[in-house]
Image (tube, rainbow, N blue to C red; front, side):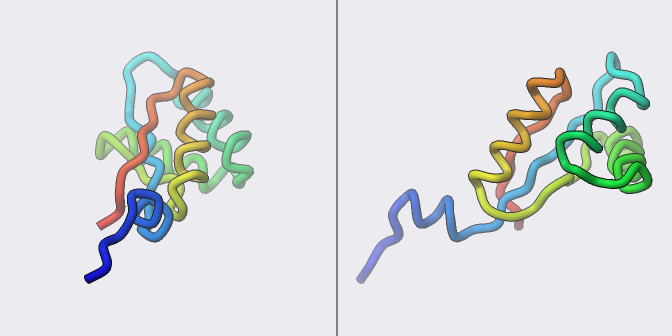
Length: 88
């Protein structure tokens, strides 16, 4: 019986970048950073920000692990709280 390697598990399963609500960044700043990092329109960034504000977190990307991790790192570099989680 064949078992999966760690790299196969990481690359074959969907991952998401989760933006986590915080109490110190302004809504306008979060929207600006999301637009810049994700290259999305303002209306979509507002939606992500409002979801995170109301629900505590928002999935801003879903796909491969490396891209999800890269997006989380870029958001973190702008002082936003973000993490990578495995999608269900």
